[in-house]
Length: 222
Image (cartoon, rainbow, N blue to C red; front, side, top):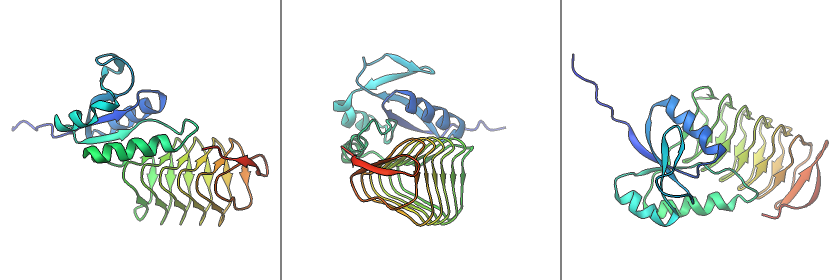
């Protein structure tokens, strides 16, 4: 019997915190990539998680790409500002990196859903029929994106958030854990919806909305 060669491509993860550890687990269970390590601010060579180490800092991105690691994934969540992920994404694209889609094996994604590059679909998440997810999004653990929804680029749907059918979420939005947006609404660009909120009407750009029902309380301060 011929030996089966391991043809996994290397991938580097940006960040090394809790969200990144969740992505590590998904990648390991998928078996499609070999994790080369993390790019983060800590000491190079430091072991962070499951034997994986810091292999460089932000200024090392080009040299890491030139070494033969051509896949990258951002393992940093919203952190109060969606543009952190956005800036990292374009910096690494300029260096030449590819951004695969990572879908945890437990997630349910409709065959006609569209998922943009660099997006993470977490454990037990659901992306239903004809939904469209932009690039570099996070659809986190147990989040639900129902049929015909549109989620813009660089948006983060936190744990157990629910987006009902035919709803549109703009670019760089954050929807907190256990929040719900009812059907056919529009959450415009750079909005923040607080954890546990229930959105019953559309929200304009650059707003923060909280409560049941959700009310706008000010700018999103992104």
